[in-house]
Each structure stands twice: as structure tokens, then as C-alpha cells.
Image 1 (cartoon, rainbow, N blue to C red):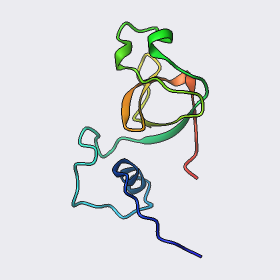
Image 2: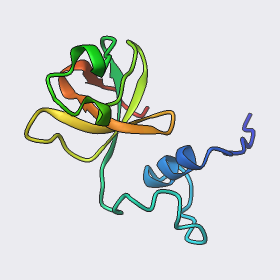
Image 3: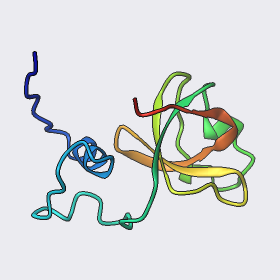
Image 4: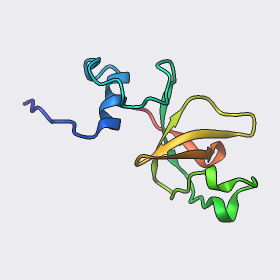
Length: 107
């Protein structure tokens, strides 16, 4: 059996459109205005807890994203030269250390 499920979360809707699971909706291009169309979005799982205020090697830890082991983080783009990704967790965005994450397939 198949049942239609409405997608009310705009960010999830955007991700599903990027992955080809929903038709592209060109009527609302303001979903993520700060992302280029060619940005690769990857789904990753946090392996460890991370509190930037306690664990960050950087002086500007306020631009980093704290998370807990098991959290699903959507990584936007490629890793920077310092080994950090730009990630999204429940609508909060910031830098996340790559060595705390593991890729999680979409399927």
C-alpha cells in the first residue's frame, strides 16, 4: 500500500527536492537563499558529543555547532582546510569538526 505524506518542513522539502524524491518547486526559491544550487548536501551522524565551548581548538567557537552523539547533521558543501564542515542541525547552522562525523547513506 502507498500513502501520501505531506511535507510541512521547508528544509526537509528542499533536501527531498535536491535528492530527486520530490519534483522541483520553482515557485518558492527562498527556502535556502544562502545556498548555491550546486552545493552538495550530505547526511552524517555524530559519533561523539561536541561542545565547542569546551572542545574547540578555535578562538571563534561561537561559529561552531554543538551536537550530541547520534544526531543527524546535514553537511553543506566540502570540508575546509581546518577539517571542519558547515553543517545544519534542526535549522541551526555552524561549523562542525569532520572527525566527529560519519557519513550516513540516504537510503
